[in-house]
Length: 241
Image (cartoon, rainbow, N blue to C red; front, top):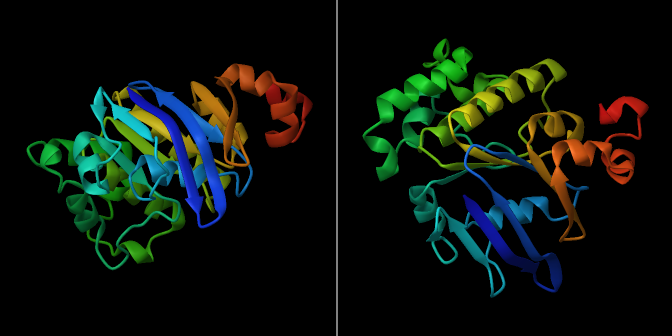
């Protein structure tokens, strides 16, 4: 289980995040909903060890304290991240990107089996192993980014806006693949602007406003909440279904 508490981030005099706390169970999908600038990406980067935090931060994974570890050691501990914008190596091939994902010591022994698993999740990648990633569509590049993260053998996967810029058809395909990732026992912490699709996918969710976690609940409860429907689901009569 991923347990996060008291995470605060400031950029100069601007407080981007204040004492945020959440948890993600093994094989659970948890979504963070919030407007642009609410602090979602700052939270994800803080958990992953990419953004410095104010004193008091606690991040634990399966009982192991990750709070003061650098980002590469956090990956070794079992927490992988797919950032907004994907962060792939565009000049390398699909196969080379996946190989780089298997660099952590925890992933090296099972590299071949994990590669087979990733290609079963994303069959399109198996057809394009020798293709340079920058020549692929946005949806295919997102598959590469998620596949590369999975190659590190994570217990928990952080995903920041995975559907950004994708067509509705590609979004459905991507989210179907994320369900399979969950079924393999990997927990997912997901930041998404697409509240409708993400709440349909998730087990639970958190609401973040102005850098603070202001609410949480099961996905079904959040979909039925009138305030959530107005803010994130367009207030449509059928959005709670």
